[in-house]
Structure formats: structure tokens, C-alpha cells
Length: 252
Picture 1: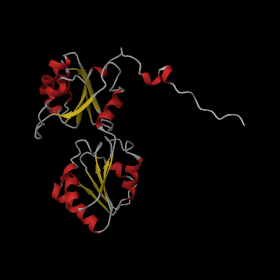
Picture 2: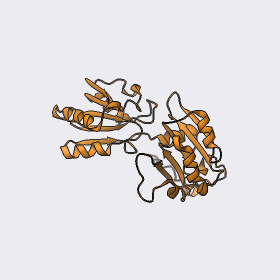
Picture 3: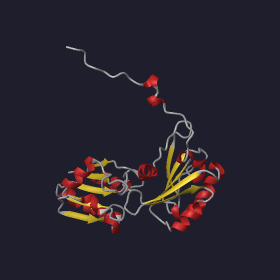
Picture 4: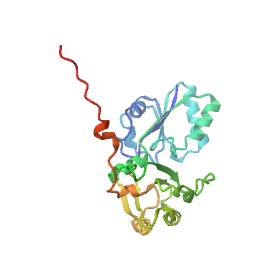
């Protein structure tokens, strides 16, 4: 049997991979993060055991995984977004390795990708930014040396900041010296969910707009000039000299 860590995507039940959906519909045991994963993602399942782990601690979750393993049952362990990014699967995997229980990670659509999609923006534009930094705002979890927001901001790359909307004023203070007060910012609440909301502005006015919106959690902050750039070079990908000739079959 195998524990499948499945990325359910950012919220829209259709933004899950075909593989993830197949496993959810075939695994006899499902453990899902109910606070972040909509129940519609589980539609069509035939599991005999479905557990919302939102209120369970790590020991309780691992105990359920052990029970399924002892019975020889596959488990769909469903997380939001892409489980390898802020998915808290590392500590679960460490326990599974200690117990000799096999696992597999099934990637999912990230919140950053969903936010870029809803904003209708490419995050890597030629001559503007070719780097995207995914990070979080340090509160309970401390940041390693060199990864403080101000340190990362020196690169002036496109930045996606998780878990920080409650601290938007501090984030603005850290970023403004490097990006400038006129740098565009977008804050997206529950991207791809039915109740999605978004606020756009600049580092100069975004804090007030976010506070007026009432957003306090489950929002991603995107920062960078790519968000409103109009003057950038075309990609070389579709340049005439890069276009490959169409291969046709010779006449018989």
C-alpha cells in the first residue's frame, strides 16, 4: 500500500490533476485538510473511510496512516495547492520513513499559479523579471538566515508572499526601500474559490486597501513590476529564427 500526498489545487475542484482525481476516487481511505480543501474535490470517491484532519494533530494523523498501512490500504492524503509548498508534509514523511511506510507525492496547482491566472498576468516577462520568489512572512515560524523579507527584496524579483496578509503594513515597510512605493501589488483572497476577492494597488496604498477589504487570512500577496508592465520585449520562443519547420511526410 502507499500513502499518496495529493495536491488538490488552490480551491476550484477542477484544478486538480487527473492522477490526483483518480487516486481520490479509488483509494479506500481518504484523509483531507478540510479547512483548506473543498469537499467537492472528493466527489465520486468510493472510500469507506473519509476523515477531515483539520482538528487532528500530527500524532493522530500518523496513527490513521499506520492503521491503513496495517490493513494494506492505500490512502489519499489530500492537501491544498501543491503539497510540497507550505503543505506541512515534511514532518509526516519523516514519520513514515521511520515507520517504513511507502509514500508518493502527487503535485498540484499552486496558489501562486492560481493568482497569476485570475489576474491574467505572466509572472516572468523578458527584461522585467525572470525570477519568482515564493516565500512567507515570518511569525510563528522563524526564517533561516538570509531569508528575511528585506533580504529577498534586494533581488527585486517577482515575489509571492504566503501567510502575511495580516501583516501587510510591515511587509510594505520591508519591501518599499527596494521595490519603490509605486511598485504594483495584488492581494488575492481564496484564489479560484467561489468567494474569491482581489485587491490591487501599489506599495504606497495597498495596506489601506487590504484593511478596508477585511482580508485577514487565506490570501496571497504578489509583488512586482510584471503586474502592470506593458513595455517589454517579445520572447525569443516565437521569434522567426526559432520557429521550426513543419515536418511533412514525403509523397508516396
